[in-house]
Length: 230
Image 1 (cartoon, rainbow, N blue to C red):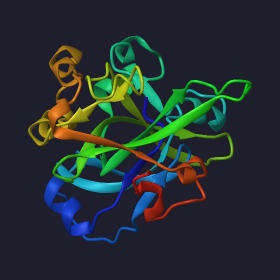
Image 2: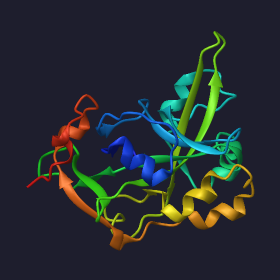
Image 3: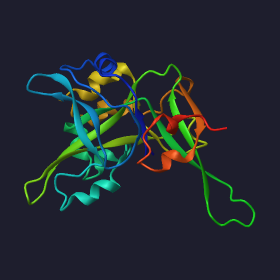
Image 4: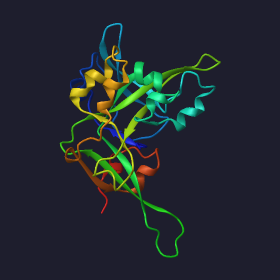
């Protein structure tokens, strides 16, 4: 699963990593939470160029009756996406990259004697070389009865590697730079060509360390969220 992530980078870094056109500014994000609007990379087919667009996290299928379903659609299991009504069309036709500099996981701890309240330790995962990376994302466009249009996305997940398995039974699909072209290619609509991308990211390229509880609240969005906890 991926329920919180970060994007701490300058526009120039994103432009270089994802070969973006245009110009812009980015606010560092240390605690991105579901339903928030965040940058994703999409190919605009009329020109075949990559742009950074602002979409809401939590995919709202185009056929949904209302937007509330999006809060339950922040992730999609890559093994099942091709068969799910909410994700099968986006998987074939509406794919995006979700830039990130790291993500969080929560690990349940054994309860203290006499304490019935569950406890969790928070962990932050990033690349060892601290480079940006991208989650495999799916997006859709929904329009309400009042004419309101919302573009939203979901992050694909896969089996965890050995580093993540002690923390959670799922991890986000992280794409390598060599995978970006295939994932964003609008002419690729055969799911079989994409399935090789749904593998766990190499564990030796990631690092994980415990962080404090400030990440619990989406209102906390500052560098203290990613500070290593004792």
